[in-house]
Length: 422
Ligand code: NAD
Figure 1: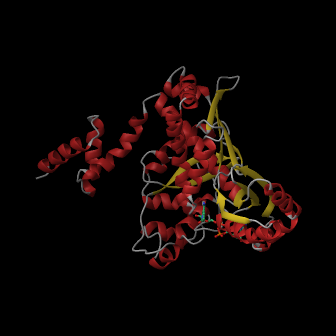
Figure 2 (figure 1 turned 120 degrees about the vertical axis):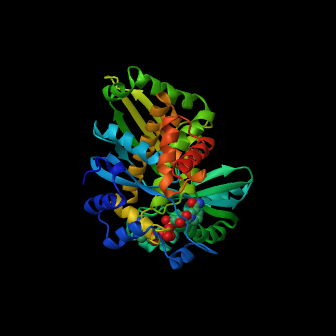
């Protein structure tokens, strides 16, 4: 499979679906789901959440050109914001010319937290009893998820942390291909009464931590100097590094810098039925883990002056569990991706996050973010101004050529088009 599909953005829906059919392992039934724009029936939706009255739609786009660890991927992205898919595809196109993204997300360990209400002199004896029973506690945790254990996962370690008035036990669990929240919450709730018994103490709350510091994903890419200079002139590499340094120095900028990364990661998360709130919480928590909020990427030059981009962040993705297999669209998107493990999905997502961030810095350092964004957003503005299907393109194009992309212009143009066609 090759992901550098020329002119994908110009194709009709039929032609794009044909590309998916040729390149991905998706069934005719799944293609039908896409074609008919019917993501889910009522029964499925009603199983997933409470009080269901319908199904909410979001555009599903495919980012092209991605090569991660030598393998081509078509990236399904569910997102309402224009230009995210185009920006990711453009960055991936530049990166693929120097071999694509090298990514690594080898550990899938998550943390479960059990609060233990103990203070003063008794604390040491509680800790001693927990430590003495470590093996039995881990076995008890693993007994509640034989399936996870059969895949080589399960509870692996216990760590004690100290706070004013209580201690916290971290249960470290290898969650393999699951996101892991349900699995870990069950384990924590199962071993808490055991801890109360053996250490004669009271436990407080028990829940997974989304600060997934043992589940880091990394990706790296080279953006070749001559390609960037050819398009945007000399000095562009330095301009991008300066833009990154702004985020490094200033949390007001860093938050927006990381929001751009999450544009890509959330879009994959939603497409694959993953918990994007967990990913968001983990990303922003990790960004300020040392006390100051920092960018999740870094940029520097190699000895030839090429721009190197790197990303490191926690990514708690699953390819089983949650809604990944219940939501038919999520299953289909996982098939489009063709990933075989949560690790592989995290490696792809980290690469998309880096691509998204590079694209944003590149645009900000050259024409500004609104240039590409507003061109794509013009159609939304046309709809907002009341343009009907057959009028949308004409209104958007007229706004772009008059360089006035706003609702007032759209209304003005619409009035003119309607007058002219009378
Ligand atoms: P889950 O319980 O639906 O599925 C995980 C289970 O799948 C594992 O426990 C295991 O028994 C089984 N499994 C089968 N094949 C596996 C494989 N190859 N690798 C690993 N496990 C395999 O889901 P989950 O991943 O435990 O929990 C995810 C869900 O929990 C999400 O829907 C999330 O929204 C929700 N949730 C999140 C939070 C939070 O993030 N704070 C809190 C509560 C619930």
